[in-house]
Amino acid sequence: MTRRNLIVGSALAAFQLNAQNAASTVTLPKLPYALDALEPFIDARTMEIHHGKHHQTYVDNLNKALATQPELAKQPLDQLLKNLSSVPDSIRAAVRNSGGGHANHSLFWQTLGKPKGGPVGKLVKAIDKSFGNQAAFEDKLRVSGLSVFASGWVWVLPSGSDGLSIETSPNQDSPWNAGKTPLFGLDVWEHAYYLKYQNRRADYLAAALKVVNWDFVSARYEDLSK
Image (cartoon, rainbow, N blue to C red; front, side):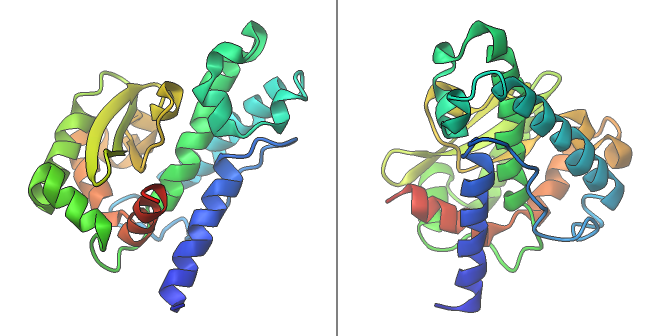
């Protein structure tokens, strides 16, 4: 196993531990890079606030909600999000919003990084099959991200046995709420980009696509395709 594969495997494991297991106490996952690692595309101050303040708030509020339902706290977070109707009314909104925020951001941090190249392996074939080429895929992602009214996410999902689809969600909702598993998502809440890009969401999306960790995304696609 190469060092690159080891690093990507560790990233996949880290996401599974931090975003999909709500056992007892949820913790804020550490960023897999320095706060300024994504400069000049995403600035360090935005990363500091986005990760250390916004995501921490989701973690704190989710823990408060789950503390009232210790049996639910033992369930994987993705399962809670997929079965919100089974969550008591008293904490359903907190699990949906704060649990969703925690899961969404935990995947988002792993999706970003200093790219060493583009997609590889099965992911390349899936992109070409579903969108024609990488440029058309990224154009569709940007257009979809711009279509989100107010705050939300744009998602890429495995589709069929060897394809991809793109969808959007409002607020901290995600494909998990519909019983699906996302490959990756891009955050289009204003707090993800306002300090650097103000109202220029199109510029932010173009910049974010320049720091997608395609090694992680490619490995995750392989894992989800098993």
